[in-house]
Structure formats: structure tokens, C-alpha cells
Length: 125
Image (spheres, rainbow, N blue to C red):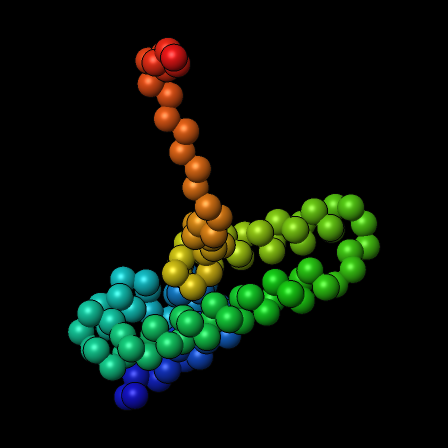
């Protein structure tokens, strides 16, 4: 890749950084410019997607680190919970096919049907 800033961005994304964070750093391209790069360069767009996927995995690993680190008090515990929940919600929004919670909708039991017509049974002789 000829663009050193694009390569730097891909490394940033692959480690879990966000495009907005990267763009806000002095000397980096703004978000719109990066989207233009993706629109104009199919190779960059493909590399961007791979970097995003790797970054999502990094975010998931960060969730484990946050949740495995014992908090010093209740405030820190609540803050860590918020950090983990926010990251997990972000992952679900970015890539629901990969990160959304799955609900099993498959039926494995039998089905019984009782039909009630409201018509009385015929008298028995």
C-alpha cells in the first residue's frame, strides 16, 4: 500500500481502535476522507474490513481482561460493567451476524391439537 496513513489506520483498527479516535489525532485524515478511500480503492476497502474484524476480536479480548480484573470498589465494578456492556453492544451493532446473541427458534417437541367447535356431541342410543 502506497499510503502510509492508510497502513497506519489499518493497524490502528486491527488493535481495536476506532476510526473516529484515529481521525481525531493530529495529522490524521478525517473520517470522510477514509470513507472516500474505501469508495475509490477496492483493495483498501477489503483490507479495512479485515482490520475491522481483527479489531472486533481485540475488543472482545479487552472485555475479558476488563471482567477478569478484580475491582477495588463498587464504583470501579460498575464502571467496568459499563465498559464491557458498551463494547459488547458496539460489537452487536457493528456486526450482528457475528456478535448478536442467538435465540434458538427450533421446535423439538411434539404438537397436540384439541379442536373445540362448540357443537354438542350427538346423543348416544
